[in-house]
Length: 71
Image (cartoon, rainbow, N blue to C red):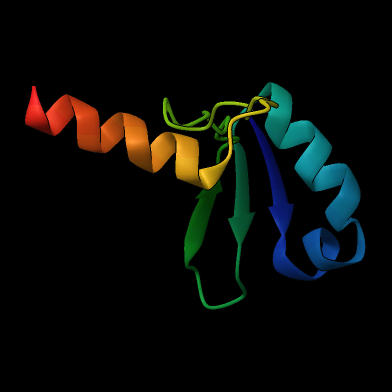
């Protein structure tokens, strides 16, 4: 765990963020408050899927939906 004073962390923010990727970082304010900085890996949504290319037209899709509802 690495600790920085607030003013030092502000001046070296890029370095602080790189360090937080590897370990927890503490940032201390002059008034005694301490904050913890931890890297959070973003996750993809299961609904975030690539689209597909097709030759189907809007009319083709609507016809298929209509047919599936009638049958």
